[in-house]
Image 1 (cartoon, rainbow, N blue to C red):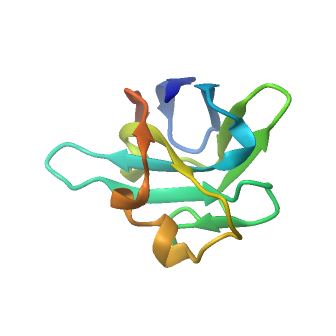
Image 2: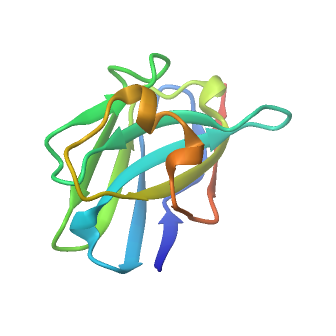
Image 3: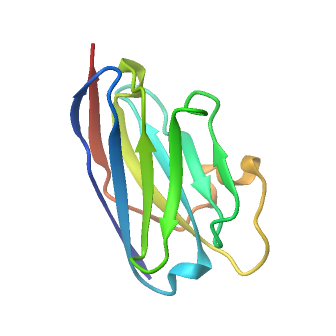
Length: 130
């Protein structure tokens, strides 16, 4: 089993940056592809970004491409989401998710489907004010 704990959320003004972190504990971190999703009030959970087990492949939703960067630190068992040039539309609860894998990385279509993830964090609130 894997426990995921997100941190770094908060209230920010539009245009500034924020960095989310997700600490994973439990089974071998290198076996897990990691993803970030978000859910705004009244909306479905949507894919934000994902990173392969090895960290050599990253995937982004079109809405955040060029503004957000996902990375992982295997020494610290963390996955980070650097969010720049934030917009009010980025306001949501952000969730970290883990997908156990043994083979090569999949496509963005796979990683953007929340049903393919095995474990989820509790979420952290991000609010962007204009």
